[in-house]
Length: 362
Ligand code: ADP
Ligand code: GN1
Ligand code: MG
Image (cartoon, rainbow, N blue to C red; front, side, top):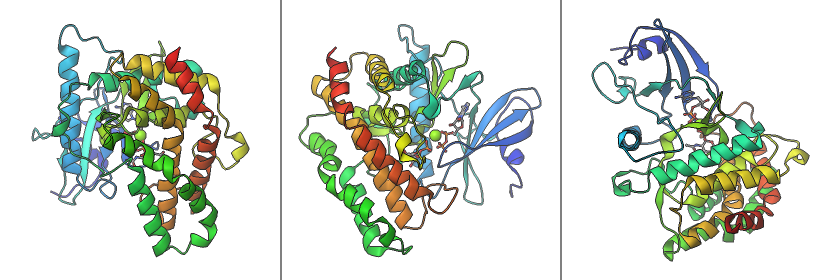
């Protein structure tokens, strides 16, 4: 069947009444996301999975279903009291499939729209950052007994520093978009931080930190907060849930919430750390994990706030050198601006290590 519009796509899912309106939600760098209104005044989120970024959408959706079913099962079991009350839930297609794959090779999924919530973004208040930390920590703790071997890796070696460095080196050699001359300085800065890029994998190899089911994309806007209570309501954007380290999840939250500038702010004098928000992120996250993290793992969290912006800077620069094939961009230098911004974030988060340790031991 040829699908003509997003309304047709929306009506391929088993919703309670016909979809009548579809609006684009322009947040996020990866998927195409739409809000769908149905005639009975119910609302949904419809997403086209970015097939270029995720080479195995079936595997990704397999993870999504397993993880959300598991968390729903836990929510319904007596005695489990999560801090985050809602869990995303897939709406099946009219054929009873968990997602739609079209004859054009597209993959779509639908979930209920979580109403009366907002995502905080980089302008979050200290209290919102604390709640985001609680929610992401709670997500990790909720999956502590999940059978990790059942998950596929939607993107291989997603936060693996040595691989990201190797990808950058290959992009430098290829210089496909003839941009290397502009970015020699950024390449050098990243290469100077090879030790940091290797540190988490060294710890994994030495058995010092355990792999857990982590979210791996704990940007501040990937958690919805309740508009009335301000509490963490629902963790979203589950595409990258896979084995990872707790330090990735704390690190990405700090990266996106403790600095006072947007990820693509070009006035780097605005990239400053707000130590209250930094402390709030750490306190929320650690409390949210409710004792599941081991002693060295807790200490390892301290490098998350510099490791994650370094990983992002490496990825943005690689994409810039490769001609912008991965991230959505708004203008030609967008990825380079993001890279420079993330290097500034890493620099200003150098002091975070001591603050994280102090918070953990308090
Ligand atoms: P991307 O992978 O492109 O970042 P997300 O899954 O994060 O996509 O969705 C993009 C945006 O859509 C989110 O930042 C959030 O604002 C909104 N969103 C996604 N899912 C829901 C939902 N179930 N309810 C309400 N808003 C949502
Ligand atoms: C992407 O999907 P979104 O916008 O939440 C990216 C993350 C990066 C982030 C940088 C699958 O996240 O890894 O941290 O952009 N997601 C993927 O803003 O690559
Ligand atoms: Mg997102």
